[in-house]
Length: 248
Ligand code: PGA
View 1 (cartoon, rainbow, N blue to C red):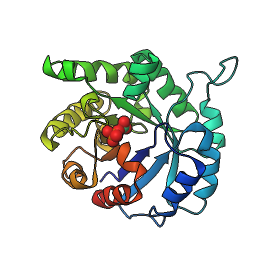
View 2 (view 1 turned 60 degrees about the vertical axis):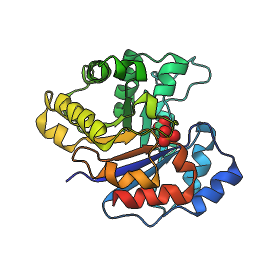
View 3 (view 1 turned 135 degrees about the horizontal axis):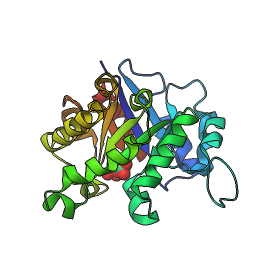
């Protein structure tokens, strides 16, 4: 039985005041079947880490450099994220791919380096609307996933989290139907199983893209949906708490 995971991706939102208010309203005592994490912007990581002392909520980052140290102005390394007690890091979010030119190879490098530094990478994959309409969804996701799997050994496959986020559903209020999402999740698990079936059975595959309190339960009830990567709704304590509760 895979433990569900709900991750709040705060993107470039927040201030100390807003974050303190949000954190004060989240469920810190823990849910038996669900792990919860929040991913603040880099500058707030250490501060949020202190606020989370004694909390069951884990810390994650939204991005990581593909090098460990050196002359990379503006970048943050996996070692630094571990140093700040991060457990998770999002890699290859569609906004990173679209706005900052991250390629499948960059995403693979980041995934590898995160694992080597003992972080759990949340590897994002997803098709655009044009790709879905051209019936290229599985081809696109297969290529995004294969690039990552090519650099991992079998033991590492069960340590990654995959997030399926259809680009057309992110921040749009338009969610994939549970059936559409489940079909892609099953495809992803099959692809992982081609490397190692036992590992694939353990890998958590999250859905992301306009997850809200009122659609979370149906999405999370699908066989291969192991939780959510939540953007907009994670900034609202009541919504996010309801989503965590829907996971169990
Ligand atoms: P959304 O974002 O929930 O606002 O659609 C999801 C994400 O980008 O991770």
